[in-house]
Length: 291
Image (cartoon, rainbow, N blue to C red; front, top):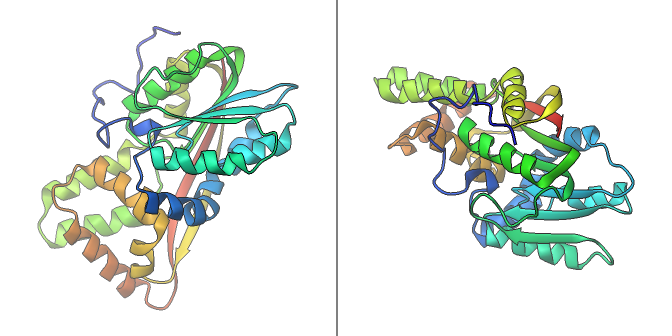
């Protein structure tokens, strides 16, 4: 593994959430059901599709899936390659249990799911042809740990793939939070919003992070997608918003008070987008690298 110091991690050791963030925030059984039913098809597939498009599957592929949640896109991988096997790790027992239940319905499928709460995981060193992660949470330091773990489990020539929101994502939320901070004289909150918006990596920074973990031949894809919501309430109550977007923003801003800004966000969307749908922008960055 590379011992080169990480350029993008300096001074950024604070995690967005306590615990194993890049292995997935722990979800309740109710959240897991919503995640599988609504978040995967509406939101996570926008990250899974470009990642699968960049995956180079040979004859026999063994894939390590970090932060696997309920197992997407593992079934799609099996459909692509008859000789593919997947081992998924995640911090959420409820998510792992659902992934296992889904795998049990597939005859002959080589899918294994394990709970992992720290690095290094129990996955064998240099035993995988591919390592992947969709929408990992956390700051640059958390991603560094993830990428180093990917590097550890891959054998030489193996491929690492990651897809996540880049800088420029969720700017509509950031703009409304800044407006709240200005109108209510909440300078500290406004600064926290600005830092959170800038904390997301650019595609260049993401490539550097992978190189710092010891990877070469980094290739990246960037695409912009939008998600529409009929109203402010529709946005704040959407499963994707509740389970992924707002918890991550709240953690990144480390805000002691979040209910008031969220209520302002809800009302502002209803006011400014009263005659049209509210559209949220996400910049999806997908990177492939080789060990």
